[in-house]
Structures are given as structure tokens and as C-alpha cells.
Image 1 (spheres, rainbow, N blue to C red):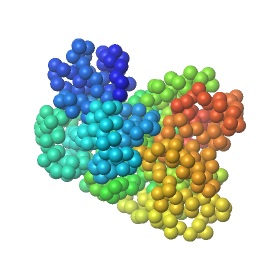
Image 2: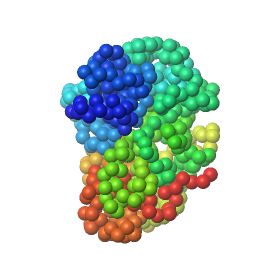
Image 3: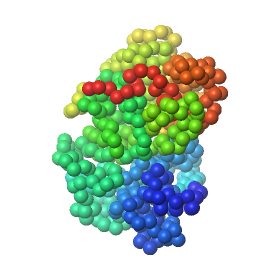
Image 4: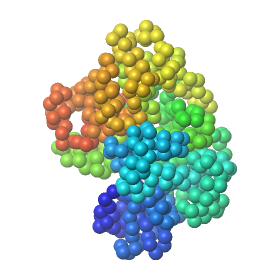
Length: 505
């Protein structure tokens, strides 16, 4: 990864938080690495070294800063924006694949040899997949040490370590203190600008129900929660999703069990309350919630480009920082997208709820009305299409989609190849451009996916004086690339649909 040294120096000297997560600054005289916005006095430029990842800084022998907590920042947006091998690998590493299947499993998922994969990551990030996964575990461990009262043994496994010994050694090496010392130093009240820690008056997770952990999810400002949470709440499927007490809640199917996540917007962070059946799923659950809310996007860069368009400029200025509401389960979203073809939002919710009740796995929710996990593709493969209250052609589409997902003929995941997934999805009978682009936008995370055939987008375009036919609108939207998925959020915002506002309790 090419590092623009002069630009990095300017960002550090300005303590510019917009660059947090884009790169890390190591200081030769102190042996520590920081985020660009570290409140400490900036070092002399000749004493700075820049790394594209925390793992690379750690491998070079630098320790994490105890003041700015360089791990408690949003992730680099480029892993979401890019579709190349390194970006796909980083998304899978964040999802915990290396912890579950090792480097060979990661390489196999990406279709490369272990040697090829390690060479690419070293060239781009200065660290291999094991080091990157280890850095992630270290930061998760620090978050849990400082914000919960979990016993250290439980905490070690929750952070993804295979043993308590490996946990102790990693924390000592990365932070230069033992886990116990790190917990002792943690304050009961947040330090200014330290996301991921508890606030005054907030009891720690250890005082709550066993298996429940509360963390803060940092994001890059600005953030407009209205479309993000409004969309999720308006399209929520009863049984697996709900809006309750100012939070979006849903069940999650995770590698070692299931969880209930409650996500509540706040001015400086998203409160994330996770009730886990297995603490080993903690890191995966956190990253899937971040992915769901698109918290690692770079709204400054996105809005700067979209705001340069004279038609979009007023929309961007009114509510900057719109995000793309995504999903925690790509297969689920694809199935729901097909169910929702040519019907109202309410009808789509009803159809999905029937599937959940009939074929979903029961889930326990001590705090609300969530009852199930969304059905697996293997469970839906046994579905009798005649039980679906929809036209015969769409029943056939649902059946074909479920079969393709169950057999592996269609692969949808955060580390997948976007173009290949598009082609595979388009080959499913009854799946047209609208469904392909919606899945690419919300399930695959393609920031340039553009639902030009969407009725709401076409109506908004007409109201704004833009071309309303799909072909003409696509041509007109060329200057918005590579952020057309975010342009869709601004176009949808022109209506008074419930997806554009936070629901009232």
C-alpha cells in the first residue's frame, strides 16, 4: 500500500480524526503507534513511521498507545469499497474466518494458495493473515478488559484466543502491560474521544445477564441515523427483527450459536448490546453489526463527490452522512428481495414472517419479542412452493434461488467476488436487474450498486428533474460513481416513506 508520507504528516499534525483507521503512526522515540488524531503532542516528522494496519505496526515492534487506543476506531473504508483480493481477505478476517478455519480456510475461500495470499497481504498491508487476525483479537481483548467484568479466562476465549496463555502473551506484547494491569488502569469514566469504553453511570456487562455484553461501535462523522434505522425498522420481519425502546433488535446466526443484537443510535457512537449463546462469537457479532450499519464508510469523501452534483447538493447538505442499510446474512437478504418483488413493504414482511414461523429455528430472547432465526437455505430447500401465497412464477424463483444457495451454485458473502456473484444471481430464473442490484448494494456491500429500475428511485429522479428511465438515469448517474449506492439513499430520502425516518416508540 502506497503511503503518501507528506499527507500523513499533515493529518497527524492536524490531529485529523477523518484519517483514523486509514493508517497508523508509529513513533521511533517512544516505540508506540497511534491513530492520527492522538491527543498527544505530535512527534517530529523525522520520528514518524506510517503503517497501513495495526498488525504491521505491531510486527515492526511498536506497542499500542495507551492514550488514544488506536484499535478503538472505525475500520479502514477501503476494505468495504474495494473488490480485490486484499479487500475480500480483510472482510473475511474481520468476520473471524481465520480464527475458525485458519489461513488455509481463508485461502480456499478466496481461491488462492496460502503462499499467494500471504504474499499479497504482506505487499499491501505489511502483515500476513495470522498477524492481522492476531491484531484484531488483541483489540477485542482490550475492549473487553476495559469495559466488562468477565473473568479473564472467559474473556480470552471471547476475544478469539485458543488459550489463556496466548491471550496473556499477546496483551503483554501489544500493550506492554498484563491483562490485570490493563483492567486496573481502566477508568470508570470515559476519557474524551475514546470510543468503545463505558460512560459514567453505565454498569459494565459483568453486572448484567450472563452472556450479555455492551460495547460502543465508533463511526466516522457525520452519520444520518434516520434512513439507516428507519429502513431497518420499516422492513423488519416479525420474529427475527423489531424496533423496541429506541433500538433496532434482531437475531443473529453465528458460527458457534446465535445471538440477539440491540443497536441504539447515539450522537457519538452506536450502542451495541449483544446477548450471545457462545462468547466465542463476540468478534464476529460485532463486525457483522458494523457491516449491517455501514459504520466503516467514509462519509466525507462520499458526500464531497455527491454534493458536487447540483441536483444532489441540497439533499446532501440537508442530511449528510447517509449510510447504506445492509444485512447480517446475505442469503437471507437475497431471499427476502425475491419475496419482495412487485409487492408492498408490508406484504414482503408478511411473506417473510410466514417463512420464519414455519421453517426458522427457535431462538430465545429474554428482553423482547424475537422468537426465531431466519431459516437456513437447507431448511428452505425442503419448502413446498405451493405453500407460498404468491404468483406461480415467483414461487419458482424462490425455489430456484434457495436451491442455488443450498448447493453452492450461488455464493453470497462479504468476501465474495462481486461480479461473479452478480452473474450467478442473474442466472437464477425470475431474478432481474432490480434484485441483482439490491443484493449487490445491501448484501455484498458494493458501494457503486445502482437500482436504476427501482420505482422509488425513478419517482425521485423525475421529481428532481432527472431522467426517469433506467437507461437514461444510469447514464446521468455516471458522475456519482463509485458512490451510486449512497446516491440511492439520498434519492429515496425525497419521499415520506417510513424508511426515511426513525420510528416513534
